[in-house]
Image 1 (tube, rainbow, N blue to C red):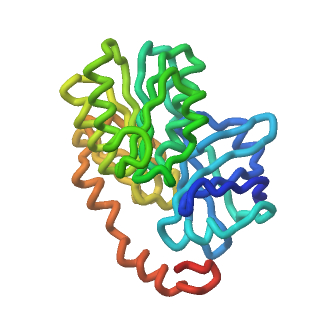
Image 2: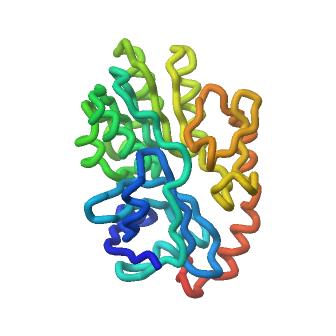
Image 3: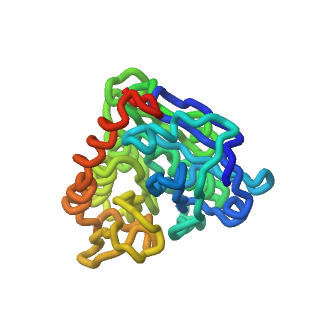
Length: 279
């Protein structure tokens, strides 16, 4: 069993959990993910590692309550335990001194961007970070991202904080004002990552995105997490989760994300007002 040692409510729908998992913490690297199950009947949930503490033997995950399982996960408190917590999985981010780089995080995607930005800065890069959310209330890890970056820019869709608009507005501004940008990372909702890739495409700047398709086993056996990259089928769990954003078939990725929308809605409706208190 894997015990929660800390819980933090980052926003009404975004939660942070720090979990005791010394063997995973000893090997975890930026860009990798874990798969957890709340109990023996629970579904397998893949979540990118938001932080790790090798000395304390802990892994930090940050998630948004979207479906039934993440809503149930959000009700658990410090001291509770998980049935399964497997990792680190996937390929780690390629960290080296590129020079000047840009890290873009949208919504809960700021969580996986954070360890990448931190590792890039520690490697000697000039890290320009851009984070955003729908509203100020949903913005996460601002202080942590500021510490992990050489420069931090913030956007909110509704203008309640920072730039009034999208992270891609700020990205376009940075691309026009700064030269010698070696690489861009963009992590967030699929539509946002596609927008980041299309923003950098005219500048021919390598752009890395982290794909989060439907995933089951996390070992490449089931094939559920298929992603089309440059006309080739890749598995996000073993070949990724990071891929060249300019080669992703975004239309296919968007269609696959909605494959089980109806079943998810049925699961939420079936448990409404039940054990997890979903409303």
